[in-house]
Length: 504
Ligand code: ADP
Ligand code: MG
Image (tube, rainbow, N blue to C red; front, side, top):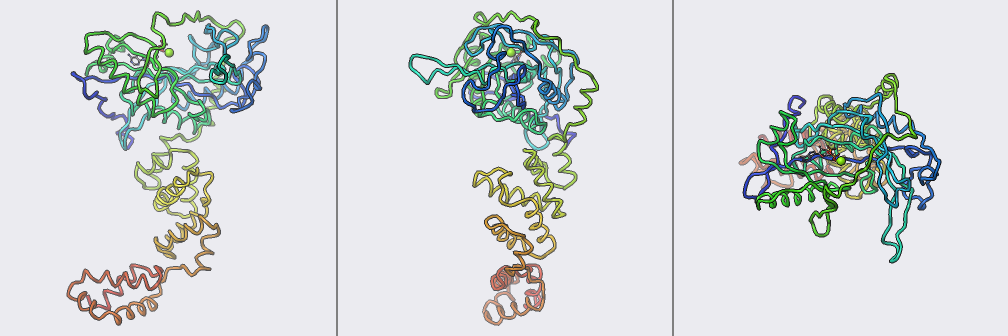
């Protein structure tokens, strides 16, 4: 698996255009730092609080208030950087990005333009078993979020909620290494997965925890390779940036329609103009928000209220020592340790809680492969039907582990195990005790099976003649005996005895 990991799929070629075109995409992902306090104040970051209840004076831009850096946020940004195998910059600094907006009362956003805290890293984006693309990370910087303007509560007035103002964001900037809509979605999901493993961002896209600005350009086949060889962006097409997307589905749609728009312009003899655009979900189109000429001049300068941010290598090493096993490593280990397919390992490691649950099941049952099947097919299938997460599972890892152990010991058949699972799921209880109490144990006692086989044979002389002529029909007898024993007979033993009694 690992030696194939950089073999990327062919770049997306746009159908329906006159010529062949390829897509080039770079993402700027804003990830909310999983901190309970804001980046420069002690105000809470709790989601859904009463408007304007989590606002410190500094968040409200009150004159004379000074920002104080939250060490916890810095540690989480460093941890994210380490998780993306990125360079950590021991010296970084905060800059003011000046622009007026009602939900940003200070008149500027504190960000890190010139000296970000994290430098170059990478994300391996899995596209199919054994096939992945390496997307380079250019940088991660820390910055403040803005507040929220509310325009739809009153016909005359707009409202401002500053609860989000000053919340810490990590802006994760990728190189333009993403080559199609599916890859863009897979990239965000992989970032989200890594940060959830690290505990540095909750990744709740619906609540705006994770949002992306999507840069899209198109080029002729071969141009991207030239850019990669030389690092010269002029080989690439002019890009447009689609702002503030928080759904992977809409991101994919937006990339498709934006690429088509650009291709139509170029094939018509026109030129793509670099600009910021918005995706209109209802109309399924992107439209201009502001062109390059209208772009803000942010007048960045180092924030005089904050000292340069200097951290020590020893502190970074301490954080590195707390890194958990990350998704790629866990997935590779599941494949080798439990002998499961890469696909199954991907399913089980998608969420760190699922992986932990599975490992506990495997530990209790002593059979990783069968445990994987049961967790994925029975448990996940059932939870999904009822829209439950793993933490809400009525069956604990211990209970499922015991069910699998009973199968492994030959005490119950796979079929009975499904009934047992259903009982444990709906009623709870100790699987071994249920099996005893309800007489669900598999019959391996050959004398009991022989008696059942004799009965079926005696009752069906015509079938016996047919089976003697055509041994394939012996299966019918096995089915009858299984039925007669309520599915509790050991199928292998039944089969053997049937063959023997019929003289096959
Ligand atoms: P800016 O600060 O003006 O937004 P950046 O250099 O930070 O510019 O780039 C922003 C994003 O645009 C990055 O993710 C980068 O990978 C991406 N990008 C740059 N050039 C292109 C291009 N030609 N096509 C698609 N994406 C691009
Ligand atoms: Mg940008």
